[in-house]
Image (tube, rainbow, N blue to C red; front, side, top):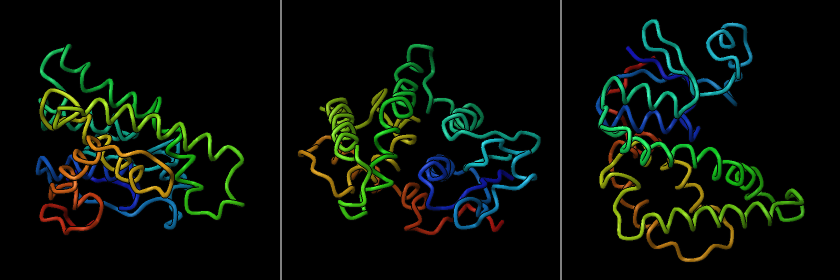
Length: 209
């Protein structure tokens, strides 16, 4: 039985749950991180030296970093989610890497401060929000005339992006109309697997930890 160690509310944990639910792979999720205060222990550090979530335990295999976990799971259970050829893989994985290299920093900065009163926000909040909007425009442009980010179908690119993109669209910051990104997000939100991942629907395949 696959074990996913991480709190339901973590966007990175939600990526892994989205995949498992979409493919129908049974798993057990266990509460770790933040309010549970159980990642700063020797036992957890032995599993994940970063002391963050998610960590995936699959028999003798233990791994961490959400996108690495997605690649591992796809290789085992749904290879087509990561492309069938090296050329196809580049179309999928470039978005996974772009997420971490371009989107993640402004996303995290805005995530930390967006709900605070303006006077309590970091000095660079406006610059970070502007950067985030610029990245969202890139996503919106990439989805023009497309249903999915890569290969004309749901792939790891969409699964890795979905939980963070949802939050980006919901942040109370000034942003333009993003019709393609909004349309894509609505399609993602309509998928039962994503609904389970974000906690708005009960799983039929997850087992009690």
